[in-house]
Amino acid sequence: MSEPLLRIENLSVTYRTHEGDVPAVRDVDLALDRGEIVGVAGESGCGKSTLASTVLRLQPPSAKVEGRVLVRGQDALTMRWGDLRALRWAGASIVFQGALHSLNPVQRVGNQIAEPIVLHEPDLAEADIDRRIGELLEQVGLPAERARSYPHQLSGGQRQRVMIAMALACKPDLVIADEPTTALDVMVQSQVLDVLSGLVNELGVGMMIISHDLSVLADLCDKIAVMYAGRVVEYGRADEVFSGPLHPYAGALSAAFPRIGDHAARYAPAGLGGDPPDLRLLPPGCSFEPRCPRAIDACREIDPRLEAHGAGRLAACIRVGQP
Image (tube, helix red, strand yellow):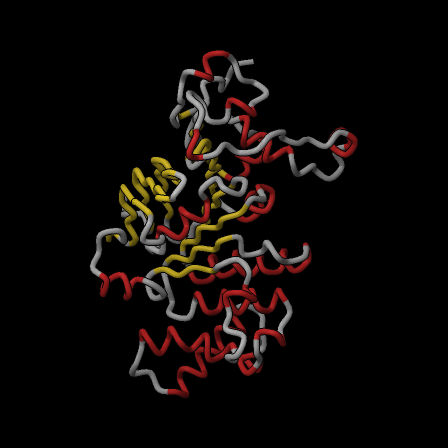
C-alpha cells in the first residue's frame, strides 16, 4: 500500500501556562489519503484546532510536542526550517476560520493571493501570476475581477472563498480547513462546502476539515474522527459515525442535530449537560464519565483507549455493544 498523504502518529501537544500544563492533544493517531476528506469533530476546547495547526508546526513556542506528523512521508515536526517553509503553501496549506480577521484589510485580495505564489515561484512572470489569480478565483466561484476588491467590499462567503483560493495558490497536496463555515449563514455555508468538496474531486487533494457540527461533516467527509478532552474517542466512516455512533459523546453530538421529519426529535430536542473537563484537572478513568448518561462504576477507574469494533470502526468506550 502507498504511504498516506498525511499520517499522524502518537501526537501529543501540551501547552505550558502559569496555571499549569494543559494537555490539549493526547496520543492522537490519524491518516488521510489523496482525494479523501477527513473530518474532526468536537466541542470547543477538545483539541481540534491544536491538531490542525500542529500539522504545519504552527503551535506557539510554549507548546511541548511529541509524536510524528508525516506529510508526504516527511516529519513536519523535525524537518529543518527551510524544508518546513517549502512545505507550507506548496505541500500543505490551511484555511483559517474568520476570513475577515485573516485577510489584510488594506491590501486587495488579488495581491494577497499572489503573495505565496511570488514566494514559492519567484521566476513566474507577472502576467502569469495574474492569470493564476483569475483562475483560482473562478475555481472557487468568484469572477476574476474580484481580485481588485478589498476584503471589506466582499461578503462573508466571498471572503471565505478568497481564503480557499489563497490556500490553493501553490497547488498543495493537502488542505486543512479549520472551521471554514463558522461565521456564515446556512445558505452560504452550503455553497462553501460544495466548493470544498468539488475541489477535492477535481484536484485530487487530501483535505482535513475541523468543525463542531457533526451533521456538516457527515454530508461532506469520507471519514470522521470525534475528539473529546484532547483524544479521538471515535473514528469511522462519516455516515456510520453520524447515524450509528458507538461512543456516547459521538451520539450526543449526532443527536444535537435533529433529522428533518423526525417528530420525536422536534418535540424533545436532545442535548448534553455539563461542560468539557478542565484539561489541567482531568478526572481519573474515562474523561467523559462525569457527563455520560451510560456511565457505570468501572468508568471512573478505566481509561479506555481506541479499540476496533468492526471494519474501520474505532471507539474508546468500555460499554460499546452493551445494553
